[in-house]
Length: 164
Image 1 (cartoon, rainbow, N blue to C red):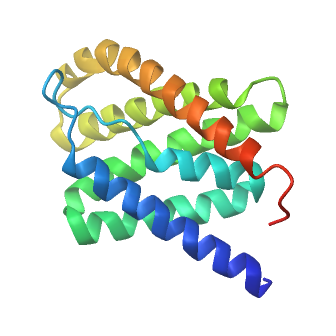
Image 2 (cartoon, helix red, strand yellow):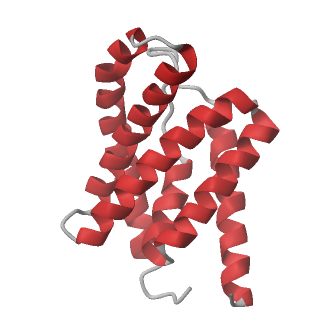
């Protein structure tokens, strides 16, 4: 791997971690418990579009693990990993088809992140009742996915002529 690429991926990991930390400081769960904006996904989507799927997986995995260890706990890491794996898998598939905009990819990622976390909650808590929360999470995942998609698109366009 080229030195420039390693440095850029290191910066994206750091930026994604900072975005996660900022998000933890300003929780949106006053209306609905557990709701987050997904600010780190701006960085993940940027890496997905400007680097590669493999690099996006690497940045996402490192971010989830480090943020969980530094700012949260191991239990939260399982929820984050489940959401990140499902979200990024779907985003990679949709991006590869070239039939979806950055916003569409982001919305699908936001929804699937919530679905992944609900699946993990059902497994860890041993109750399907938590799935009743899914409609609310799908709505919030759609709204935050649109916002993150718009911002991600602006960032990607800003770096359109820059070779990374």
